[in-house]
Length: 56
Image 1 (cartoon, rainbow, N blue to C red):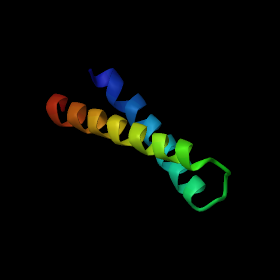
Image 2 (image 1 turned 90 degrees about the vertical axis):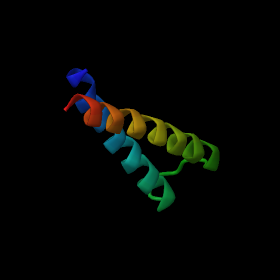
Image 3 (image 1 turned 90 degrees about the horizontal axis):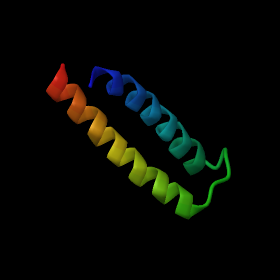
Image 4 (image 1 turned 60 degrees about the vertical axis):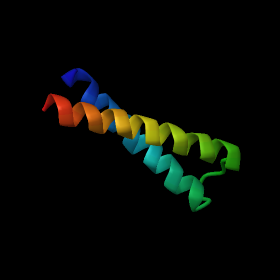
């Protein structure tokens, strides 16, 4: 399980960056894509946090 914590953290950083850049209109993404990225970010963050709490 330790092998999943780091990749999920990296995925979260990328998703946060996409959310911020899209929200500031630095990169052009549709609202629908922005919405789905936010949902994915929430799911991956919960999994990442749960693994970090339970296995460290």
